[in-house]
Image 1 (tube, helix red, strand yellow):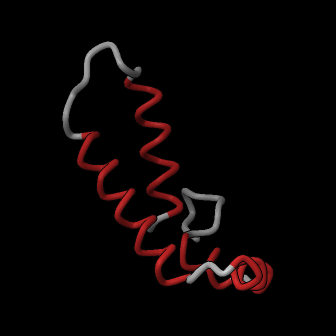
Image 2: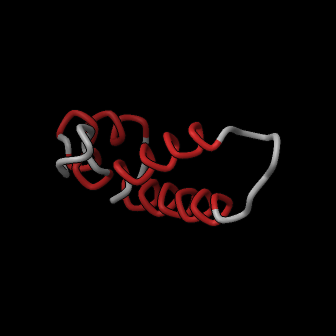
Length: 73
């Protein structure tokens, strides 16, 4: 966890015993889930570098960037 983020990062979430138990019960592979989430984050970051007028506000984009960066650090 960083000072600018109050949420757990992805590795900490996936290491949580309760999360691990729920994923195991649901048949979720933590490595596959982590890989998929990191791929999604990479795609999101790539789209932030391409301006899309009228689709979202700059402040909304900044909030989303911060949220994804906090979780996927």
